[in-house]
Structure formats: C-alpha cells, structure tokens
Length: 224
Length: 186
Image (cartoon, rainbow over all chains, first blue to last red):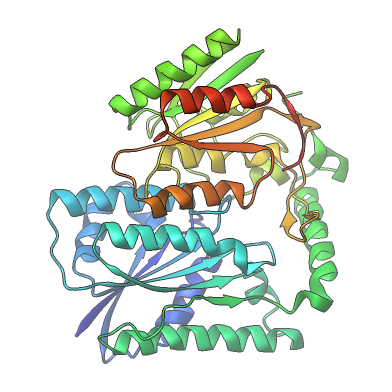
C-alpha cells in the first residue's frame, strides 16, 4: 500500500486554514482502501514534533504539499520545514523509491499565475531529495473558493478544483508520471474582478472596525 | 546616507564572509554608514498570517521580537541589502521570515498595476532601494534563474544579484545603480 503524506503549511493555528481545506479536498479523492494517508501540519510540528514528521516524510511514496503564497513564494515556516527536512534527509541518508511530489498553492490575489515560482521552488526541493515532481495546482483568490462556494459563479472553479484533485489521484495510481503540466484555477474575473477587489477592500475596513479602528487609522505610518 | 545589511546568521560560510566584506568595502567607498542585522531562529520567528499589522496595529508587526527593530531600520534607511543564501532557488527561511514580516510596510487594500496584476498598495511615499544578493555553492542554473524570477517577475524597484559573478562584476553593478531612496512603485 502506498504511503501518501499530505502536508499543510499554513502558519495559522487557531483557525482552519484555506490550505488545509484544499488538502482535505485532495485527500477525499484518494481511495482510503488503496492508500495510507498521513497528514502533517507544519505549524503543529514545530518545534517538538519535527523528527516524527520527518520520519513519516522519509517513508512517503507520495508527498502533497498545500500552502499559501507569501510574497510570491513559500511562507517562511514552510521554507524552514523543507530546509530542516533536507538536512535530516542528508544526515540520515534517506533511501527511498522514486517519490512523487505535488504542490497545491493558493494566493489571495485573483491571478493564479503568480503562484508559479512557488511551484518551481517545490520542484527544486523535489530534485534535492531525489524525488519526482509531477505538477502543481495553482489557485487564485483561494479564500474566496470557500467563502463564496455556494454562489452560482463558483460552480465552474469548484468543478475545476475537483478535476485537478482527481488528476492528482489518477497520477498517483500509475507508476509513471502521467501529467507534468500545471493546473491553473481562478474565478472568471472578466466580470467579477472589480466586485472582488471592492469587497476585499471593504473586508479589511470591517475587520479593523471590529478592533476599534477607524478607516483612516489603517493608513498609519509609524516609521516616518 | 545609511545602508542596512540583513544576513542569515545560520549560513555564514566563507562565500558569505567574502561577499559581506566586499559589500562593506563598496558601501564604505561610497561614504555610506552601515548597519548590520543578522537574523536567525533565536531572534526572529515566522509570519503567522494574522494580519494584525493591518487591522490591529496598522504598520507594525504584532509579534514581539527583532522584527520591530528591523522594520524601523528598513524604513529609515536609504538602501537595504539582503545577503541571502539560496535554498531550493529561493530565500533561506530566516531571510524569508524577515521578508514576510515586512508586510506592515504595505497597506491591506488591492490595487491594479499597469501590467494588470493585483498588488497591495504602498504605505509610505518612498522606500529604501532594495538589493537582494543571493549566494551559495554549487547552485544549478535553474535555481539561479528561479531566484531572479521570484523577485524580478513580481516586484519593481528591486535589484537582484547572484554572487557567482566576479568581484569586478559586483562592483560594476553597484556603480550602475542609483543608490538612495526610491519612489513607491512596489
């Protein structure tokens, strides 16, 4: 039975992250009778459970990493985790069969293309641990995929997500890599982009007001 | 004028020492004052994605560690140089933590740039000139290109150099740059 390790790498701890929700969607596409599925939450593995997580990872046949885009690449917490795993991998001389790696990257901006460099980083990591990078699922407007999931205009993107995760499941079933091109998913912003940005902006003001701040205070310049 | 150097205290190999000496020499020649901040897991933690720097304490990180000093030093410098070990074609974790946690220096809202992409608007009218210098031994061409793309494809007003160049090439690159604060094109 193949060991599939699903890594969630959002730094948030007190709320369920968007990255974890995408990972759960991907996991649901994998037949529980055919695969061993183990979840690693990077945030919870630091600092005391990292060895346990690395041991699990070293026995993986498939690694799926889901994370949010921070400054156009990986969040620092995931960078640290992969850096530390690479040290573990070299120190313990981990030997494994060809491991398949997939990336699921989501960003708050509408354009899924901006996730590409983060996917390339996961590809580079895969090469460093002698694993085989398959493809990435690049998601724009990630949080909106759940916040507005029941809206009529979300039907197509949600279907695309399901198809992308099915493509991961299908790829895992085969020994050979059956697909290498990335999958890009976002809303059809031809019509909805202005609305998305308007409500996005308003959301920040609403959240700040809950903390007792006026809109003007969001523009503070403490280091002038 | 003041230059701030930010380096990763966990990757201080010989390449780093040579690079740091060279950069200090270049900056000294140009008459710049230098502040060095070394970041590591003992003085800087990761960004928690809480957005407290936007909706609780606008402009300041809510985590109580070295980052408050770093953000103040960044915003009061004329040039900021990140001496960055290249790991898997991107920033090392410690440098990435410093970059992620510079989020308070931007505003939370969205704006559309001339190329059609979305970005958070600047908080300030001017910013220090940012220069990112990557180093590492045995880097593949693919990782070097990725390191350049991560920044150059998405940010304006930032220079990226990779320390596989000769000393003369790096000096020349600095001579060609306008050193000093820049406008707020992010």
